Length: 120
Image 1 (tube, one colour):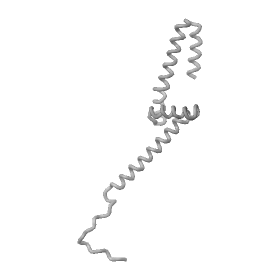
Image 2 (cartoon, rainbow, N blue to C red; image 1 turned 180 degrees about the vertical axis):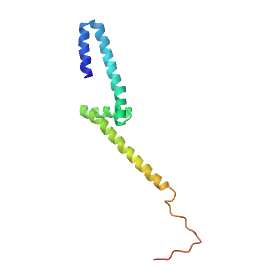
Image 3 (tube, rainbow, N blue to C red; image 1 turned 90 degrees about the vertical axis):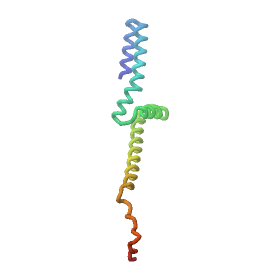
């Protein structure tokens, strides 16, 4: 929708103060589009899917390179899914290590003076 309005405004500038207004508008539209695509959009997606902006940009670039527009659309949910899987795996490993480090999990030390247990 923003591109359509940019084109419409560009057409209007062709009839009003032609070369100057059109050139200024074209530069403004390009700069704004780049700013929105590289700064604003990653921040919005970071807040909605909790993916870091750098990962978002890299995922979209890889997705678009591999599968075109469909890859770019699918890249962020795939990146978020991979990030969730990795986070869950790390949390599981951390929990497993903490459980083994808790006191009371190891058997009590053997008392050398205690008699041998009777065989069953």
